[in-house]
Image (cartoon, rainbow, N blue to C red; front, side):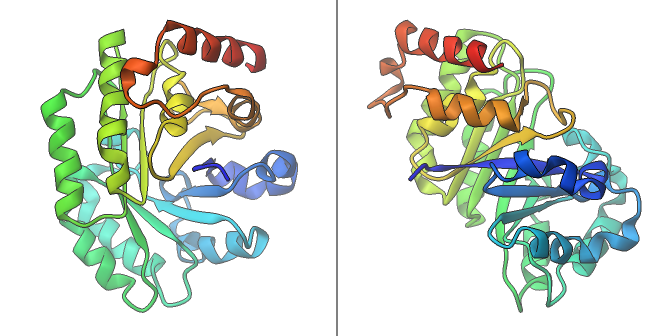
Length: 260
């Protein structure tokens, strides 16, 4: 059994045309409901129940992504966001996970309180669209997630060099086993392979995010492409990142080219 889940982003367009995307959705194991990409907030509290009825076996992640992390929800409205989470996490909600940005880790206690009758697991996340996050900051985020006892950690950064790429792999090999779910990858076309390889070398479970209609972040693969790439990638879990030599990376690059 694989240690990753193909995860499709659900926005308002996908939600309104689920039948059109049924073939690709059948490849998925998880769905991320991006509430910030639904302009009508009145339907937010019922979205997870509606989607659960359609896809009863899927893991459901709920996200209200702030603008600073690539979303559409204004950072200045954090208090209102907490009120929205309270509405979403009512007793009949169907979410398995909630994604909260690292800077707002203090909100986790509120989220846990809102969902106390039907607990959710927490993913602490950080997106850096401008540069590779430095090692000390990455370690700080890992330690913060540990201290907050979160089940998941998602770090999306911008690798600029092979050194950055191997920093990413090293962190995965050193820390992913400490979490129920661990996702760490680069949001660049040049290092797009990190979206695949990071899941294959992870010592825990990993959500592998892809799109159905249009990419929500740089370097994302279409779900159908991602499925073929992961099925055909000949990667064995390395003992250390030194085992990820040029031969391994070239082979993965060729697989990606074949199915992209």
